Amino acid sequence: MTYYTQYRHLALQGAKPAPTAQQIAAIETLLEAPLPPAFLAFLQVANGAWFDYTTDVPDGNGGVEKMGFNTFFSADEGDFCDETLVGEIRAARKHTDMPVRILPFARDGGNSMVYLDLTEAGGGRVLAYVQELPEWTGKRAHGFIELAPSFDAWLDSLYIDRDTVLDELEHSVSEPSHLDAMAQWLDIGMPAWRRDAGIAALFALKQVELCADEQD
Image (tube, rainbow, N blue to C red; front, top):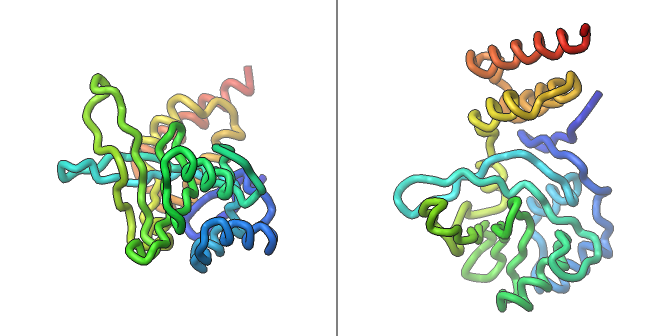
């Protein structure tokens, strides 16, 4: 069984059909800018998709915070805060006075988002808006932070985090189908995973456990 659609090194789930010319025109009209070819190419296969990849966000202290902006907005007609490209543009302009030629295109599990900056000054760069957390959670950089000079460069920077793999194997894989999906995800996004002793050993252990469960 195939669980994912592959785009370069990315494994995508739950994508809608490719957007229509009318939907693209509606986005560009509202945005007041043409969408870059790299973004349009990705949108053809990732319209409203979900993908489990990590983005390194500079933390302001020389390090990075690992974040996942994994919900990609769709080209559907939308209103406010509905995870459509036009809906999120409208919401951002209403609630944050976001200027034209800025496109919110994906979010994490909360209120942090990534944006395509198509202004003359931005030149197509990708920005993250990182929501400030309460002080007790630990310090983090927040506000607008540049992630990559272009959408293509941002896609290239996405990766599967090793600690995420180990955590998901330990706590999220509970059926053989989950393990099959995990193997497909890793084959696409981390092709050398079978040579990682820690991941390979935990994967094999989970195979044995699930096989024993099926036999009981």
